[in-house]
Length: 583
Image (cartoon, rainbow, N blue to C red; front, top):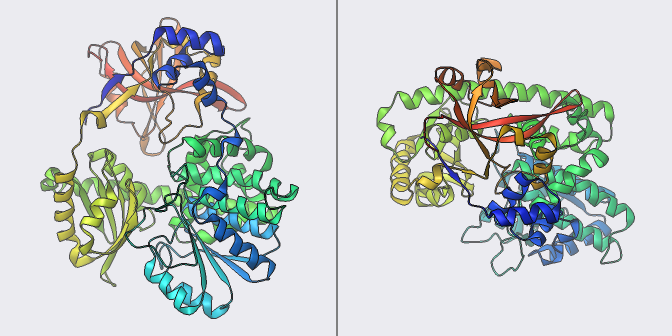
């Protein structure tokens, strides 16, 4: 679907005032004004957010009771098992809490279910096994468990002490665990409900450290641990695509700063393999495009325990070995992803009747269950529809799928309405997973599409590109773009500034680049300024742009590209039009 450009309104007097009072570039001042930060006080507070803005962990529902139980278990020498998830949020949550309890002198281990064999979250077989090995142990979930009623009932019946920490959407019935920690617990009053799993784990670790100190403040050793743990929290927070506002933005901002100074041995090895070791500073894109995919790949391909081992090992040689293995698995994942995406597009094109559906439900026995979620995001964006992609297991007669939203459709509500077709499902508004019998897929496809059609409408606002400011290429000096980076860290609900420039010209023919010529590289000029622009996944634009006779209008996000220690201004192209089109 074609995008429309909407220029955000701003107050010229406000821009002049902010420029003068805060000594910032006019471009940054205009973006602040367009985003509603119009007083010098509000703008300054946003640009200079501090760690002391984090809320007291004791306010988080369930934390005081859970921390008390865990500290008692540590002092009594009981074994503690952290039960995590296999994605980046779950892996970082597990590693963070493991480090915390190790520093506290606890007997601690971890359990990560296999994505391919056990699926997401708690399962009864694992709990039974853990109980048989040590019935006196305490099990703490991270990033999972809040909908695991049956599993929690089994733990209770076995006498296994279970503490659940999670952030996913709550069901009508809560699990009967010994402790429940969740930022949106009914009756709770925590000021910030958008923490992800590792954010919740960090708050619990903070409370544990306080109790092992003087009751209010952590010991110097524990405080040093918490400062280093913010980096793990940042990685999981960015990877889980939760809103980067409030506490999340503070955690990611300081986690990125600490990543250089306080990274663990494993993280340093991963940064080395990812080519980040020469960068002078890090941003959220470094996590999203370099660290997170490598951690995610090992979980998607069924070996998430190795990612936790990497993040917890003290052996530099083992860390480098694991980091290289994660890097290789990520390359395999990318190859598999490209193949599935091609097959999915061909499948949709071969079924023209699906064009009228409000959603897409695609399935294939050859698709890797660990990769379909990534592809579902691309398919949803390409066809402008909420998408479910299912990996079939013909021998067992069921399929496991991943779902991705489009234009803010509430996936969880849609799956709930169609739950009588499903064996299992969970997730939230934008991303979810499911398990379904093969014989029910066609009926689910029809009913889910009907629900989407009846309960969701793609509006003009869903297809808008909100432009923060129109600029000339000459305005984009190194200092101005560096100034704009102060708005970061960027991510969900705090996007990198989107700017527009009109009547720009191609300084050279557009070039396709990357494997399969998937990406676009071009040089554009306006007056006497020439800049490089790139567009990932938009190689097809090269021929289209070259065919335009005349100047172009473009929208883009300005960035600083670091190459061999030298930074230059570069534009990430978002959309373009022939200049003859009115914007």
